[in-house]
Length: 250
Image (cartoon, rainbow, N blue to C red; front, side, top):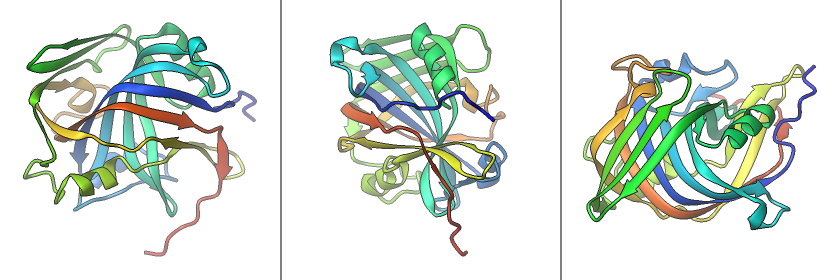
């Protein structure tokens, strides 16, 4: 029996800046990375993993004042999945440039944190992001976004008819699924957040090692589908809950 507490307190933060890089893949490719109680959610024959790159302000237990929070950068590789009849996400990997938050996250959450050196640079034309892993290979990121390309137009080959449909599938996700307890119940953390009001943005450069021959997926198994940019997104994580997912008859 695991006596270690998991998500023992509610947490909240502000995503001052957030990039959502959405990768598509065949459902069987994602299914091979999931536990048997989760399955890929599918849109137009494709499954998705979003790389969430966030500049987070004052992460803290929800009952503490902002001044006691930690400001840091966090990257989460989250797969869009179903657990029985519920839609949500599961975390394949996370990175952080805060030693404290990575250690606390690995002790108290199922985020799977790794340490990294992270930098942002913004000018009139581009927003550039670089992640260099400190200890493990195959997870570096280099991304350069064209700020003058912000629009509501999805790429023609994205498989989504418009931004509203894409955001409904890729961002309207309010449950994160973790491990399965001995009694069969699934660890679940639910969230609430402010409205997602993002835009599609084009990339000049994108290199996500973990998604292409690196720590998570093999070369050629995934394709970058789209990139969203959003700012000032409030997030609240509730305490852990346990549930028995009900199956939907196919």
